[in-house]
Image 1: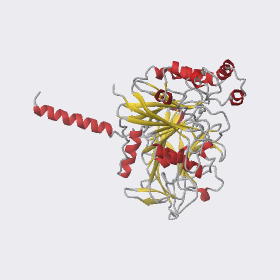
Image 2: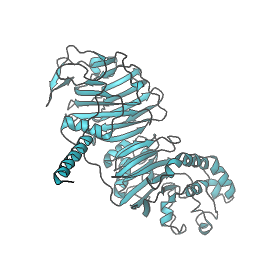
Image 3: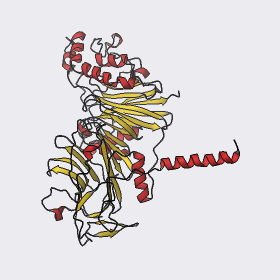
Length: 524
């Protein structure tokens, strides 16, 4: 092959790769850019109401819709389909908008929305300027409601600057991905959502159901409102952000040869030491642990605050279960019941990923008093365990089987509050610490039979010298046991260190200890 031909071919290949990476998303169904006029530049035919006597503000590149105090006409808009399209016809959609809220306004406002029903109970979604100075996303099918409420410390929109807000809805995966200034900040599992909106209009600058439109109109500027007929990728949202702002997003961190994972039930959102103080202690403990991925139970509204403080991505499986990660997320999987189990793929580097699966098993049976009575019979404990937790883990492992078969390609981490003892702890050798009982707990046995390793017990095989008990740093008079675990499966991970965290210098914020395991990445 001649050198010149090779050189030209290399340029073409490089150019092709470049354009492939920078490929913009296709044209949206709705695209209202407010460039000196109100019209839809998207693919669909729509009717825009309120398009006369509007005010525009001059931006760096063009103009925007002006709803600020400086505007002569503060008029919100509505965009109506002429029934040539409905988002229900697609497998998902993406909404993206740019906004600049007035600098000193502490009030909350709707920025864009698509809603039917009323103010308090509705079906649809809305992007809002929250009263805390950040933004907020809400989606509801009138039965179930999901909300993402980040912090002003990390995701402020009250700073007088332009910000991009976006979210995608994937009806097949039953999830929404949320974006702030080009970055995917959160993914929400939408279990059994029924979001059929038909030809419901889009509202720009106001909640459609407020009694006084002028009073509730957004105070600021809005630009580049777009609706796509599919969930856009992280790269496409980032490119939209860059094309308008001129700034790229921070590159995702790359895992070195070690990955540190934490599992922790933080106890009612970590608030028992105080609504703010308790959560701050949770954050402090996680930061000092150095955990890259946290599989969390009893999140209960504190996840966004903790994730923002760590500068981590946030995945909400339910009010109970979540995953916080230094690394970006890929697809999620809605397996079993949202309160008890879920999985999300975490991209820890180029061609490297792990499946992080938070778990919380039933709190009953509570056998503590029975065991401490001195009359407990192992067979009776096992039979009661199988009625709840034993059955739950059996069903979970059945659904997880498809991923277990591929564990050597994408390793699995299943971690959380199992509310159950382990057959590796309740042994003949450990009678002194476990009331003279040997119990073959069915949950831990099933995990072992499914080829999962108990990372703590693998590293500390002598159960009588390294108890590793996680219940309870607070309730010392209750039966002490190890009920929180980090299990893993797959030849690409090797546990090299594990520890239990159950202290804080100012008071431990949870009734469960945290477990942290460090894994070493094994090359194929």
